Length: 303
Ligand code: PLP
Image 1 (tube, rainbow, N blue to C red):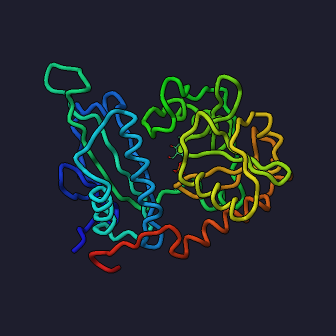
Image 2 (image 1 turned 135 degrees about the vertical axis):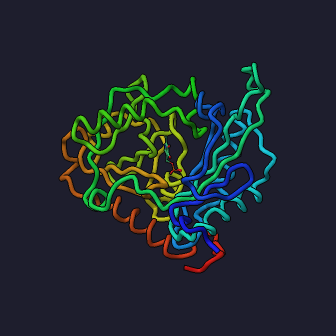
């Protein structure tokens, strides 16, 4: 039987499954007071987990990068995540797994002494942009705010150091745009809050190869473009190249492949969604209607 508020989401915390609104973390967990945490977000579409094993593998790599360990193997993590979804009854869901450093023993601040903690939740699918924005294209700004340098925090480790990105969101809204992309110290674009960026010039794709989180949707685009015979370069991408691109799109678990049709209030080409972007986006979603890279969920209560 599912809980009354299950469709708002189910969390796993302290070994129990609870309605998401009731999940609480200890206030002294360094995940909260020091952003000392890593996480990963997978999605469920049409009752199937998308690339679940790849997400868990990436989560484990992030934990290794932060010198965290959990007494859970990949199968156990997969089981917990599947239970969260199954108990929620959600057919389309946003599913997060988090590992925090944990609570330091009283009177210490030594991260080695903490017992790392695992939290997870499934909630209704979250879209980074609304339907109209996804159809017509997003308006983006390129901010002067620098992305935290890769030498300080390895961006391939999914982390909670989001204040540069969050202040970028404020700047985007102040400037009448919907999304923001940050640059590095050399003026190359990196990524935005929750997404990677691709440009298309003369029929070829390019996406930054450094200073970015290696998104799962980015990986899908690399695979799909190979399948379609569209060349794709992983290289530095300058702000000028973004402004001069024929097409621009962003990629995220929270929305897939989403076109960008204005940059800094200027249209990208003729401000309509470009052909290659459409081809990739349509293929991404068409594949989601099949069993592509999916793992079916057995629901406790069939909706
Ligand atoms: N870059 C950052 C900083 C992110 O936080 C995310 C996802 O949350 C992405 C890129 C896109 O990754 P994915 O396609 O796995 O959602």
